[in-house]
Amino acid sequence: MVPSMPLLAVCGSWGLYMVNGPPNFTENTVFLRKSGENCKVYGFSEDGSLFACSNLPSTTK
Image (tube, rainbow, N blue to C red; front, side):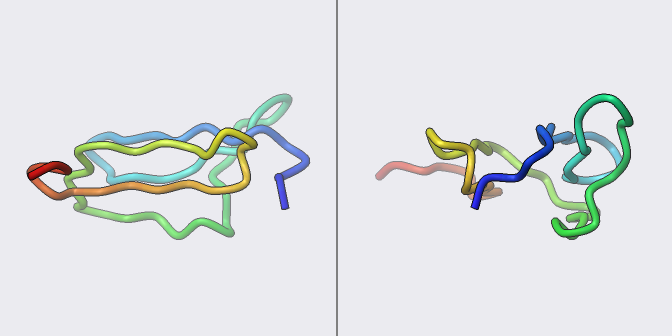
């Protein structure tokens, strides 16, 4: 199910987390913060219902 409010993925020194979109930018409580993770790549599915992230050094062989 696609969230009714836009989500923004934030990757920084505090880890990887989701922020609820406008009008109020608050941390999303459904997606648990990944503290200390070194996320190399992340993305949403085309319809916005899925989110994936990886900290693998390479995603291809």
